[in-house]
Amino acid sequence: MPYLIPSRTPLTPDQVERGFDYLLALQMGGGGAVAGRAEADPELAFILLRLAEDIVWPVTAVDAETDLCADSFALDEVGCVLLSALRDWARDSPTTAVPGIARSIIRFMVSVVPDPDHEDFADTLEASRDAHLAVAHAVLSAPGAHR
Image (cartoon, rainbow, N blue to C red):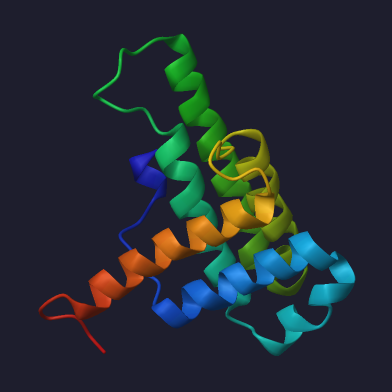
């Protein structure tokens, strides 16, 4: 899948917050809680797509450190297909893609990467947000980073 993941500028802390705010609002309050946000924030489709890449890719990609088997490559391809479809959707219809990408992230996290330390999924989302924020702040404060 590396051929599908172009080098990217990391998300800023503000972008991470906006993306996870949307995910949490959707998870806690449903579609009504996020109505109008996609239209008000044109960058939201991009942000959610980037979060999906950051969440899906590490879980599905073939890892040279593990024992490889046919299932490893199948999982890698499933990740490729999912991210490719989400990219196409975001490119072709960013406004309608926002809730779909968000629901895909939530479903992926619930089904594939459950967090045994957090019984409530909102806690899992908040823990993931905190981890993504830590990375965003580290990248922002790195020498030579554009501010």
